[in-house]
Image (cartoon, one colour):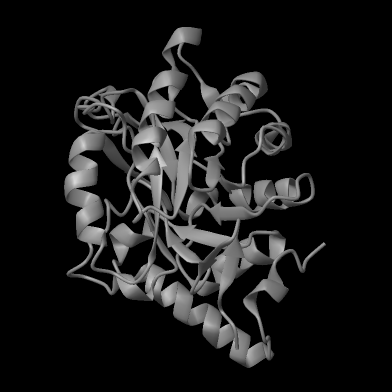
Length: 301
């Protein structure tokens, strides 16, 4: 029984990763779960300089999910390389670094800094960031902007590049095709869906940013649909995410066309979720007599 997968020439021991922004850089979970049993640790987004993030409150619970408006708070690339990457050297798992920025130049500079880091196996580019030079519209909400940033990042990168797509668009397949045409090695989806919650007792917004990103089981059917659409629109590998809390959830994404999956919000509920998902996929393979997990990718047409 083979649980290994290959994305852009990089082999992973199993198809289960952690979703960026929900697992820190692994350091925060290392005493709670076994990082060595994961296919990959996907780090929180890192920018060229430290970002303070949004004012508090920044998180609110919703039915079957949560809203967050953290604002991509991070210590900047210098601290990340010196602290976070050094910590991850002690673990036998792949490392995917999520990159964020406010301009194309910022993205490219971070990617160049990471090019020399041997502990970085792949890059995941967060295109849900606002493009400050183009009216603060997210890079991932305009196909031309997405093509441009993908092309520039690919030219600067030494590691394979995953473009993380935003669901807050009319047609997700147009974005997937733009990323593929610009040279992306893979795409990951979905990022959070924009939502809002109002505190009726205080008569104000539940989070200071007014709107936030909705994640958790509530968005899973939307995410599975978008993965299926993209799998039938592009040929590059897809990493699916959105409300995965068990192996059955993960297998929906894989059968819809994902080569791998990422566990996000549910790690807050149970730090062992990602490991349990990996174990559950193995159990399913044994029960169904599936020799290789890759046989399941896109099996539902």
